[in-house]
Length: 407
Ligand code: ADP
Image (cartoon, rainbow, N blue to C red):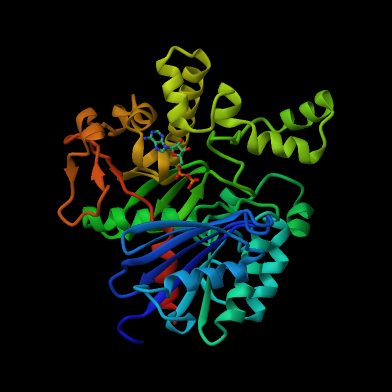
């Protein structure tokens, strides 16, 4: 292993590609960027930051391979951070679904690719894009190790009583219909971070991790492993989200299909893209817009805000029971990191269970840690038995670390 190993982390969507180039020793981000609208003739856009400067360009990008070539071109231009693909030591790929095959990140070979194809029906929008990007990256960088890091892997420790659905058993046998859970790299990262910050080993902690972004999920973590999580067979289950319903009575699905004459695709679209904060308010999926509308007196915005907070509180109650106690609640992602209003609302009234948020710390971010990173702070009150921490997530770093470990 050389000193200045550079690891490229890739996160591919069907028409997008996010990347970060990281120094594996210092864990410094050397450059990062995003391609949007890949394959939409002439409309692709590349935005990237390098050396503290932001850039963007419109260009013709037909596929992930061309995107990778364009990325390396800008990263190796004057004053760049690499001179060619040869300077990249390994690539870590974010893959949404690993099915039941993968409980950790793995080095990619043909067998792994076959398994990824096999589980593609479980994530038809995400996995094929990741596989196409992996193939492109391997053909451009055939000599180096490529690693797959799965959103589902961390939750493979969830016991059968929590991951099995009470459906006829043959449907599990046939389709592997069960809870998988997502955001695994994020939950794993923040759990490790809070353990470091409070200086107590993960194996001695009971943690509830709240990843509240556009997609949102909560995980119950005991002795360092995930024992339950709110997302299920797909990311639709669990919390109310920006545009997703989260858990609802499943009979509503068939009722609406009949009443509104909806096809499977239409009901799927309704529940994934038109519900949640957006559906209830008719205004926006962005919590900031909903909070603004509430301030302006919009009643539906007030209702949506209350529903969103209530859905988080419900899971916290459930997971305290699941864990048989609680040491730390950690809040992360867009809402968790940036919304004192939602953090306070979700945790209000839990003093009886030893959870007390300090309103001042919550807003002022005053209670930082000695070795804390930017954005990491404690918002629980001094006497609160359960510590409540805000920790910015870093899934890319988790993927880079796994990649390095597999070299
Ligand atoms: P993604 O799941 O797309 O990665 P993020 O983790 O970036 O999403 O979270 C995005 C969401 O975070 C936005 O939709 C917005 O609702 C919320 N958010 C970001 N900043 C704030 C803020 N200051 N107050 C309230 N909500 C915020």
